[in-house]
View 1 (cartoon, rainbow, N blue to C red):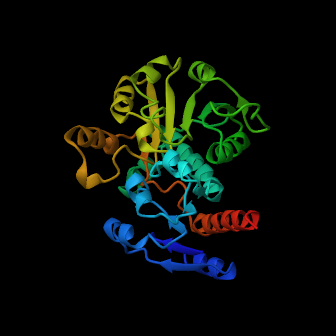
View 2: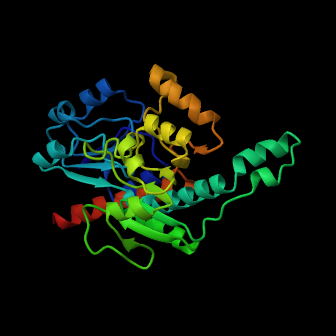
Amino acid sequence: MKILIVDEMHPSLIEMLDADGWSYEYAPGLKRNEILEAVGPYEGLMIRSKTVVDTEFLEKAPKLKFIARAGAGLDLIDIPAVEARGIALFHAGEGNRDAVGEHVLGMLLGLFNNMIRADKQVRQGIWDREGNRGVELMGKTVGLIGYGNNGSATGKRLSGFGCRVLAYDKYKKNYGDANASEASLEQILDEADVVSLHIPLTEESFHLVDGSFIDRMKKPFYLVNAARGEVADLSAVVSGLESGKVKGACLDVLENEKLGKLTPAQQEVYDYLVKSDKVVLTPHVGGWTHESYVRINEVLCRQIRDWRNSRG
């Protein structure tokens, strides 16, 4: 089989593919029209974040047997269309779960202890201890929405900090463990001090956290989003920050991450977020560590190898 690789990958991928005896072309510089022209003869496709796999794409790839996504999310892939063609689909959700768990924890600690504001002040010669008195994470009830790879890795770390962790996952049963108790969404709305999102972007999850969701939270709460930006309606989050119902937000993702192409409404929201001491922002790097960059390749290559072996 021949594999077409159309995104930048860690160099370790080449060594792994060579060790497994694959034939491949590494062409991360191809643009979409060039990919569509080139993909026809290939049985395997490896992508990261730039390539949308839709019906148009699949029509140009009649020999495709598998797609491997170097990351967790599959929102750029038309999954029903892929499944209808019998194409195997792999992703590396477990490859960056530890990185995401650590990043969420770090963002919360930074927010709770005013680390970003305090750092800026000290650099400016301001020594304000009382104004930067922190809040402890220990004892807080954290509601995780989604308890897959990233949610469970986050729950493990939060439980180690003495948090009471509740986990809601619509698509699982009996998933409670030593780190998190299985809960309903209503229980999280009633009891959580922190809500952390760990779900893929789908039609169902789009703007899950909106004005209604925020209003239904019984207590003022902190919001964490290290999933996909569109899961939270940021205009509603800003309204919640203004009213005090949202006490703070840790956002690794935004609804529009192309900051030079924001709509006027998105720009207004963005301007508020960047000026707020109640918000910690990072550029979609929750799973973006040096270690996860390699581990993602390891996970994908193992999945592809197992798939090949299962076919005889």
